Length: 394
Image (tube, rainbow, N blue to C red; front, top):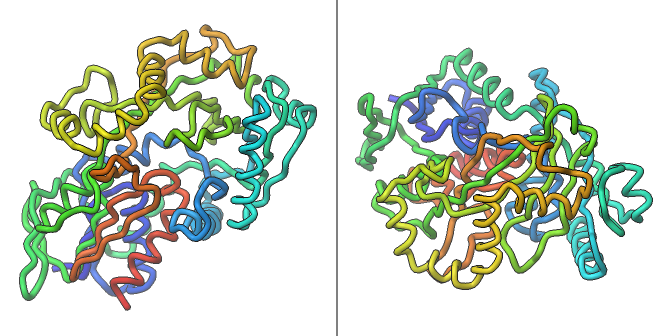
């Protein structure tokens, strides 16, 4: 029997197991991952950005854990010799309306302790020669890193500390008994004093297994990407983002230089037809019916139908995708882009149609559920882990 079982082998689950091992090195830790490899879903399809925290509401968990997690992550990378770089990014304003929105970001950045600078169009072009924009924010402390490398190091360190990382073990049920919590999986039954749910796309399902009601339902949104061909890498020096539209819940397409080489363009954000729906043709009827009959999704779709339709058009039209990127980089052409691997964002959605804007950590007895951990969860993972473990051990 273990002292703690962690469900989910993405970066948040691995970070929780790592923090528990740091606090209680003699405890037996078991991490369960349903796939044959770790970090297969959201973490493994991450563009690799170390977020600064500029976007998040001051005082929120996202803001505080992003700032704390950024420092912890960079230190972890240094200690474990994992590639990372503080490269900076620009948030570009194309017109006066967007310039006005930059001021709000500056204030939010200051409140969160983020180093950011309002720059002119000429200064922007010195940083990113191919970008069109009349002004921008330069967020110098934004970075990029190898998140897969982070996960591999965490798993290696856990195993070397005598802990078990079990892949190919899908959780099917939970039983809270008086002496322990029993976790039923496809490879057997396991008992523990504590269970931490970090199941990402399936986190709400694990909450239901525990006979609890999740605060919101996970609705999957596929993020579709292209990559620049090697000959066109010069179009992007580091990270190029649009000014976000506060009326729409996603950031919009952007360009990201990756730590392992290459430049990623996207994401386009569309409803996925399965929780693990990485292509338009991947359909899980159960998942799809669940989403399409959920009042929260119907209300969200009604409110954001126009930008949602534009996202769908870009999903089926490379030309439309390129046109969206050309707003930032006019020199970009269709032949500069090749298809890249898609990701799926596990977005928690309330019944009233509102997106859950912050991380959600739900505790019940000897179980703790991380039920909403979209971006910037990778950056914040070690700080999220501190909160989760402190809650259990307090």
